[in-house]
Length: 328
Ligand code: AMP
Ligand code: TRP
Image (cartoon, rainbow, N blue to C red; front, side, top):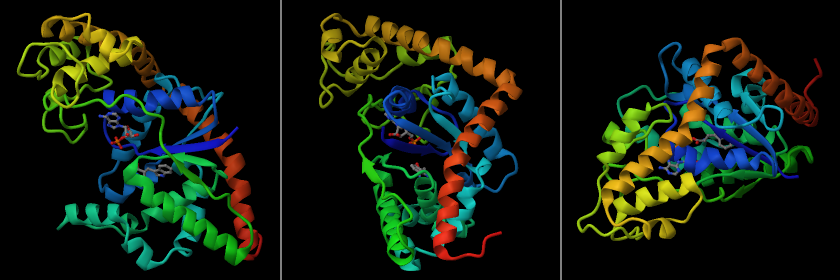
């Protein structure tokens, strides 16, 4: 069984795009692979300067991951800061990567340009070293990553190979794999852009925690296309196609088959809204249950951290030994 790791930053609400595009595949993947999922709160610290923000998002994200069906007895779900080996190996990784290499990371260039006059933490610059530690600690075989994280995975491989060359075989060299294709969910108000937290309007975004009335209303107001024909065609009918794809993701039918069942936009919007309400209903119920039982949530996370630490501690010790540090 391949060891597969993917991590997610606790920054803000999880939305329908995250769920249908990514989280749902994590849930399926836990039965096919030895799955590790970290909530990377230390990464989120790179851009945050208020107390409590990261902790709140971490708890909420954890509750959501369990609510969508990640099973703490099958997969290993942990909070990064609970497994102190991440910080420890992170420093060692910083010493294996050059200033020049970090300066070439396009995500750093983009993020630092966007922050302009804002405080630019050194952590934002050394972020890929911590990410390398996240991956290498678990002898990870595969990391499903989108385009934006490819470069970080390349640098992780470079660091691992460099370390192995300098200090002897220590790390498994991870492979980037394409995440299994999930649905691509577009903004309901601007169906040519991906649904995203940073979208222009709240009306275009379905949060996993939106109440049923809000969901139905947002679908009712979804932007559709000029003519009134129901057809699945992303290029010329992005609005209707988005609805069909969302409905397909809920029902398991194909968007083309669904298109054949509708002649008008109204019923398609109503049915899609209802289908999403039903899809999210049990998830929301479980989420609220977990949020109301903090002790249970903490205990699930403790269990995840314990499982993670069993692997991470061995890898860190191996790296320390190969470096020739004096044992404590
Ligand atoms: P983000 O919140 O943008 O970092 O994305 C987290 C995960 O959700 C990534 O795996 C994305 O590919 C996936 N994702 C985000 N937005 C969408 C969307 N609108 N449709 C499908 N997948 C998405
Ligand atoms: N950098 C990733 C992002 O911004 C999050 C991340 C941190 C990650 N560590 C990781 C992803 C390890 C995969 C594996 O989305």
